[in-house]
Length: 404
Length: 167
Image 1 (cartoon, one colour):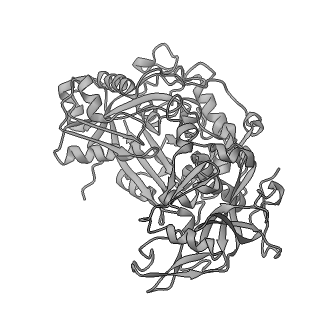
Image 2 (cartoon, chains in turn cyan, purple):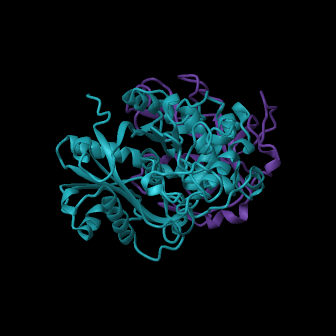
Image 3 (cartoon, chains in turn purple, yellow):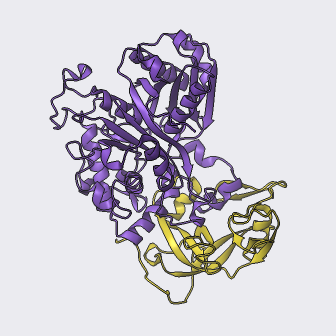
């Protein structure tokens, strides 16, 4: 197959407020986020003819959203899933356009992840009947994301000597970034002591190792480089994409180890191969932070450090603003809000445009102070290539490399 | 059956469940039985239809010893399922069975998720839970034709390194 590098781009991005009390439907939020993304791109309703979303029975399908925006769809698809869908759907949108099915696709995720369908699995989700493959784990009180993932981190600690304090630095870094993000739900900076001193949720995970649950919609617009040329924004180009790559035995990934290995082991050659670059060429990462350790595991699996050295990498200062390769500069899912990955791609698009929405007076025009004190700048200087590492589960992940 | 209520959960195993129904019924006779490929003889867990290694669709149930080692674990301090709140803190263990370790390739094994319980079916105190400890299967009878395979510490010495999360 031909390489689509630089032939597709993200032309617009948009989101609603991140909150714990949206007070409105996922349909209302989706419409707002997509409308903002279209305005950002400078697209009229008749110029968007594709729409995709992902959900798990907790959202509104694309064909109910499009009419509110005056869009007549030539293609739409709502897929089942959560984290790691963002990158996969960007790739699928490129495929739909390449196949001639449509010309420009809006991708969205809308959820009341705190006030309605709790992402953490409490409430209605905890009471659902248990059947099929869920019988392998749920009867033993292993149902939430944290409960599903914790033994992976525990084994990493056993094999490599990784510590709670090391991964706490992920929370520390992301909280610093969030303090420079007016949109973030949690803007307060925290310390390593705060993280390891917070209450246990499921050992080895403390409360502050876990991400937020929030209400929000997020959207981005995928179109061809050719079509993007005349639009309002300088396009951000897709250099490579890998979608929902799996380890073997993804039905029960514990069967085929090493269990400390995650899907990035298999995804990295696909995505770096398409892009024709190496990890050292990347200036900004968005490694999915459902938990502190998921960021760490993916960074090491994609080769930003050696396998087993993720703990040292994330606690070295490299992943903080001002460091060599900042991660999740918006504050990510730990501090900004929980979006199943969309917000991390949106942030990287803005980083590559040079117009991150921090508090710098000239931010919208790309004028930044690069003062990374609380409440100040969060633009990375001269960011040219950014990468997203999407996480669904230890055995499933996606990846995206973009450039300006 | 087809629904077993346990800790506020409805465990649903309908007549047409061709993976789990027999598994839990066999556990009720206090035997841990895994599916073994009729062609290449390798066992697999959870119960499935095609052999992951040779793709044969023919299989039989084969009994295993129920002995193994804790490969990883977690301690749930904050239960999300209401029926588990009274049990906290409880251990979920990933047990590596003695049979077929490192077969057919180095990092593959028969691993099972369960709780680590005392012989009286109470959660094993956290201080006794560690990677590397030896365990044996314990059957928790929940219905006439349904038991959950659980695990309990055995008195065998650990063969290698024993490690638990620093307190």
